[in-house]
Image (cartoon, rainbow, N blue to C red; front, side):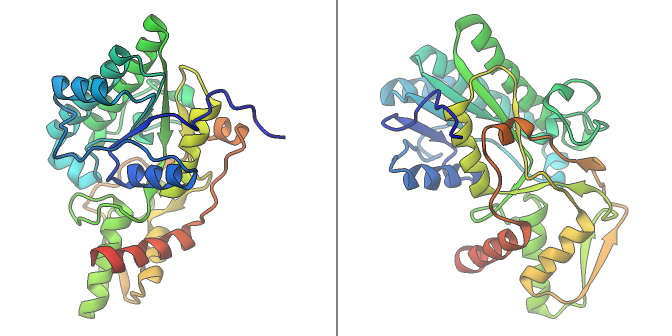
Length: 315
């Protein structure tokens, strides 16, 4: 049975804010596959942290839809090293784009959050109603608080002004176009780059942060992009919506899978002096499954395709 489309995207002017990032680039490709050429603007031409610039750009280009994928993001190391940057940048970006969308009469907006918004001790799988039910994981609390503020902004503009602003909470993401910086990147691209370097130099061991026991859920970026377009067309509500793969994996098993994809056959050594973060983070994505969406790319295939892109475009 086909779901009724509440808001057809065909013939809409769609701005993908943050189009060069992992999520944004995947969204651009997904829209182009449907024959839709989205609006984009390079970061050097528009600083979303500046309200006047942001408002002027929205007024001038008149998008019908905004997908807010722009953000300052990173792994545990980056979050711990740059907490002020993570909370300031993301608060400013969200506030300026959301308010600008309201002022310009944008028909629909999708604001991207993160699974780190949920309490560190939340029961797994995590349902959307667990938001604000407990303390956050300290290592990324500034980023999480900014993302929670973005959810509240969308809900408040919906409640006061009737804006059709929705929010999505994806799990950990990876894929072509990711940030492979060893210090600032998330676990998959950072570890993949280090495994690649270890293979080239003939090292016998690869160090992995933490004990290896935490469990994480990973979604390939193109699967998320399909899910976001599904959400735009089929969902209109105040509650955030989780988007996850539905299965999780230990960091130890993830590291082994990355080593296999890269072709590194040395030992994995876990540094227990480094932080693990939350022990488990698996989302309940029942709402998305109800919209007939499901991921198509498994972890092994996704890692191979990500490494292939790394070799072709980054290494």
